[in-house]
Image 1: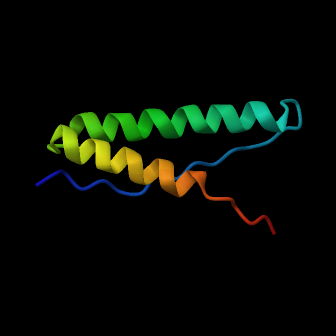
Image 2: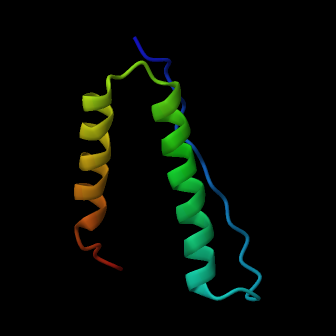
Length: 67
């Protein structure tokens, strides 16, 4: 069984010096690296890893309702 991970918490302190797009890119890079590390450390087969990636793509391709 794969090791259990605790949910990650990311706290960004926005100082207003960086554009929103740059902050989003920094967060996205962090998120992708975290997912990559978890998949590498898991004992999932290649097919199972592909299923995880496909599910993430499907989830993140859905439009997000902003409030």
